[in-house]
Length: 112
Image (tube, rainbow, N blue to C red; front, side, top):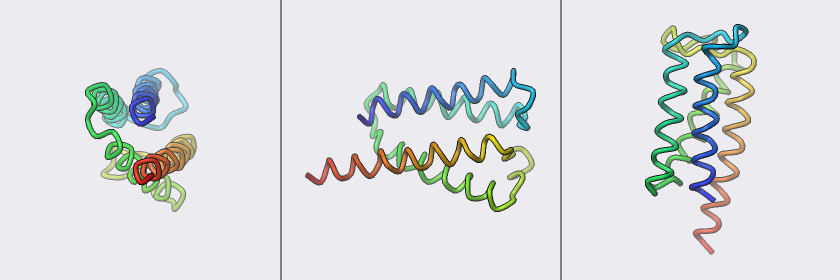
């Protein structure tokens, strides 16, 4: 389950990064798009290599929930390049909650 989810979330981040270049409504810049692409490639590579995907999912959970919370709290950008438009706030929240569910399911599975 962890490997499949890691690959799936990597594809989502990769798609987000590529879409940033083609969807005019997204308020992100090239560096932000590049970070999505890099995150996607790293997630896919770690999942395919059999690295500890559970740790990857934990960090995706933490970071995306923090980014979503910051976006909903009114923070419009971090360091001038990580911007939080309305769509990205919701995408980060959904990814964060879904990742939290997968992470907790994996931990419960390992404990059994």
